[in-house]
Amino acid sequence: MEIQTYIHSIRRAVDFVRTRAPKARPEIGVILGSGLSKASPALSGAEVIPYSQIPGFPRTTVAGHEGKLTLGTVGRTGVAVMQGRFHYYEGHSMESIALPIRMLEYMGLKTLLITSAVGSMQLRVKPGQIVVIKDHMNFMGRNPLRAFHEEEFGDMFPDMNGAYDPALRKKAVQACRRYKIPVSEGVYTAVGGPSYETPAEVRAFQRLGGDVVGMSVVPEVVVARQMGVRVLALSWVANMASGLTKESLTHAEVLSMGESNSKRLRMILDDLLKTC
Image 1 (cartoon, rainbow, N blue to C red):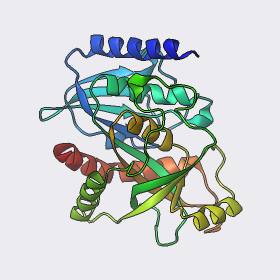
Image 2 (spheres, rainbow, N blue to C red):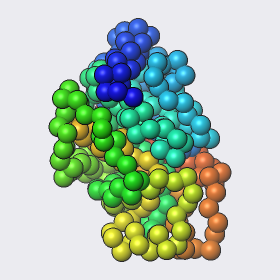
Image 3 (cartoon, rainbow, N blue to C red):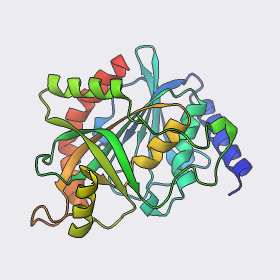
């Protein structure tokens, strides 16, 4: 896809969403990960738009990702909630994964709250725990900014130092402690998937400083930071990574645990939406 065609796709998506929700001015965006549809915060004046209706939007193909955009407000702040995300392993291009983030930034996005399921590579970080991401390592093999630069997107070489906003991280940790939810901060290791990691890969990632591993988050963070959007990433630990226990890994178990963690994540998100 040529860059001008891509920009046209973003603007078409913006125009369509504004037609369906003319009052929407989303300053805060929320992306809900696997099994977290019930973590969606309550919005006033909500307008729900299926992804399938938005021009240029990819299609979700993964169980546990509903595929709809909800726009509304919390107090006087406009909020957009993406229930379901797009993954590189589904066959989506990086620019397609980036498109919804760029669309929301064109509509006024200033802050992005990302949630995801992860595997823990540290025995001290147990399933069910929340990990506030403080940094990442990208082993996906691709960067969402590659070959798709335009001045209106931001710098071609954005600085990724402090990509995960320190002030937002502090608020997230405080919210978890307020609700007595086990929490830690850690480094997210991004892989392409969709197969789970081998024990040898997990050992290598541990030695490089990784705490948790997942198959999303990083493309969205890189794009958001290029456009000057503040980012917070909250990951919930669905399982221990390969080689740390004798248990096998299944996506069904991830969805089941996501269901049980949705209530806790919703409490955290509700807190953050009031203070971001």
